[in-house]
Amino acid sequence: MGYKVAVVGATGNVGREMLNILDERKFPADEVVALASRKSVGQECSFGDKTLKVKALDHYDFSDVDICLMSAGGSVSKEWSPKIGAQGAVVIDNSSAWRMDPDVPLIVPEVNADALSGFTKKNIIANPNCSTAQLVVALKPLHDHATIKRVVVATYQSVSGAGKEAMDELFTQTKAVFTLGEITNKKFPKRIAFNVIPQIDVFMEDGYTKEEWKMMMETKKILDPKIKLTATCVRVPVFVGHSEAVNIEFENPISEDEAREILRSAPGCLVFDKREPGGYTTPYECVGEDATYISRIRTDPTVDNGLEMWVVSDNLRKGAALNAIQIAESLINRKLIKAKQKAA
Image 1 (cartoon, rainbow, N blue to C red):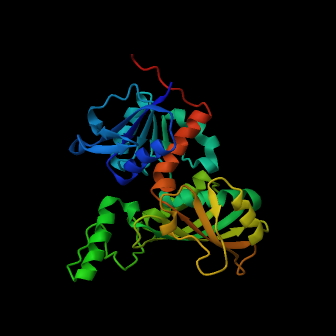
Image 2 (cartoon, helix red, strand yellow):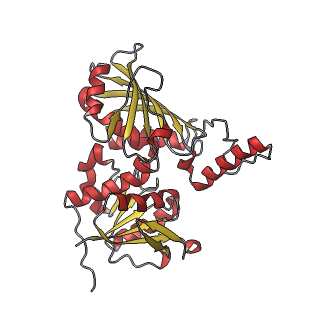
């Protein structure tokens, strides 16, 4: 018997990607339901060769739903995820609402799938921030080998991480540059076309932004609370694909050749590292791909046991939709959930 899956926020960037990936990976679902706010009711979403009509979240009965993929923002999740979980569905939540809750596992399956068993406290599992997800996939196998002490990361994050309106703003502004039209900023605090913005999310009292704070806290929760991490998160005029320049300091010696071999055999990682023009992966090339791509692996001579690397991934996939579906697959593979008996 297959599972019944509900996708909340089905009309958004990530929701649509979730539907695509459920179909691509032949997820064992007998029924998939597309849900969103009342203003989206009746809209159509593609699911393989089928078309799903969007239904209203606030009128939906989740009592026979097995898995709810939630991608409708933090405020919706705070209100609805506990209600849906109380009806017996496992909520896999893509917002930041539950990530730091001690009763909610924060999961990247290649990194800490063993923590999944804790989901029964609230029936909620959190997906990490998109920039954190690809980072920890690359860090985990190296940490297992040589123990990471400190990470310094600068991100180059695409506009799709801020939603469809942000993508539209980059497109509109870019067009305006060439047509000498008026450039207006709505989604971003400054112009994004042909520019970079060293701010993602709001500023906190210590001068870091919320996005930077998320990377620090989530890496500790997923990987190891002893790791020290500092981040600078930058929005760049790229539609899809996050990039990260990562500097790592280890407790134990590790050579760049060892790192390459470890990462080549690690789940979710794909190493493309040639010391020649174009011998690295860019965000453009990772779009639509599942892997976290790693390039520019080299020794940092300024510290003992230091390495540098370049990490790129499709933020709508591994950073969001794919990771959520991999969590659902892990629940099934580990026999942590069973499909509910459906009424005839």
